[in-house]
Image (cartoon, rainbow, N blue to C red; front, side, top):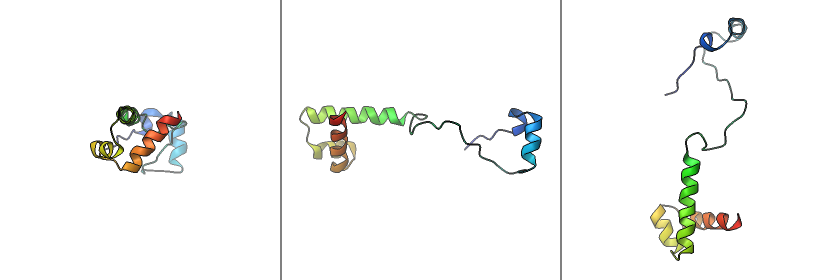
Amino acid sequence: MKKYVNAKDVLPEALVKEIQKYVQGQHMYVPQVERKSWGTGTGIREELELRNAKIVKAYQGGVAVAQLAEMYALSEERIRGIIYDYQIE
């Protein structure tokens, strides 16, 4: 559940009055100036990077693509994509 902020608590009174000319009693979304990259706020990006590094290391250690797919509940195509992506970097 999202926590909403009362405009009166964070904006100058003059700005609240100006906004009320256009929007009254409705929820309004104010977009961020700079949008964060996907996964940076939740930590999932780092989790996936770590998982992918483990997959590549296991593959380089001789674990078969089919076995990795089963171990990580991913398709063989996705495992191959992860391996390919890491070999390019």
